[in-house]
Length: 451
Image 1 (tube, rainbow, N blue to C red):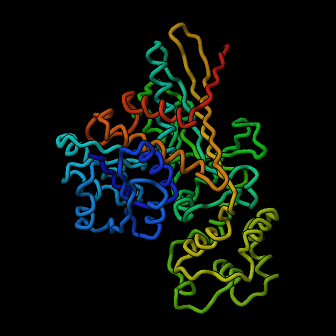
Image 2: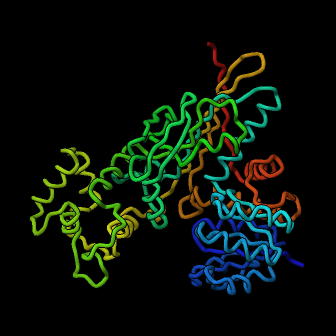
Image 3: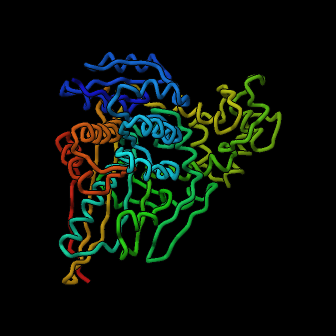
């Protein structure tokens, strides 16, 4: 009898996920989405795949649809995972997600362990492949008697260099809301054994670091900023001797400065604005900018000079704002708040054109000290480009690890119970091995250090 997998969600990472799960013809998939048309389209592309609609906020709807399946792979937003996991626990069904483990999800660990259920999380790219390549290196070093003294990791999903043809040098294949909110996050990392903290609310874009030495052959230079709390990974990765510990996000140079400017102009505000209510009169972008910098009824020339002043006289940033059509006569989507209006605008203006491709860049920089006091630096470089009119790099790097984890659970190869992330060899080893078969493997460069 065929094993059955329920895939919740129909976003862009689901296609390579289903392709890999169904490839051998021994597993049937049900795609369930609140956008049933998308689910039906996905189902039409792969054998043994059917579609249906689901309301993931309804426990009864989830209970009905999970029944009869051997495994659930959730590709819906992270906030829904704990409630989905509870239904899975009640029905004794294993689960896979690519999202970070939230405190609420972690609280289910004991119950899942006692029920003999596995909830695998963080098996995408970041988090996912980044974890697995890191701990594979750390375990090898420890097994050979060495210790890791520093770990710096940078990862980003970006347009391919030739497609980075807008002021942000960034494009969206889904809603920009999460990306914009990330710019307001706090962050913590270790530098020379000192804990560095970046406060939430906008300081993150000021913590940018030029990274011209990372993938130096790229025609577009990179920059990066800290990603959330890196210090907690000292325990997760088992790195008690580490002096430098940073997990960061990669962008092309210029991104952070322009995002900082959008914040300064009030475009990240999440406050309701009467002029942006759905019932309000139509509004042009230059008029919204005038409202945001507390001006009314001004001519375009005046708003341009006023925005320039708000940007500290930075002509290059003003020109970037203009190229994004934020001082134009284009209509604003009335979405209630400035950040929602900006999201709608950027999703349209900075969408990938047909045939354009994306890229994934990941580099781990690991400092190692051996028992004989010799030191080395190891770079683990992982690069993947999307295929024109095919799977994007991001979709492949998120969907395929999740598919491999799902197959491992179904075959009994993954037996660890509870809330699991891929930092144990029994989990990451087979996943990395199969990813290599799929063409997703790193280049490793080792350099001896002479004091």
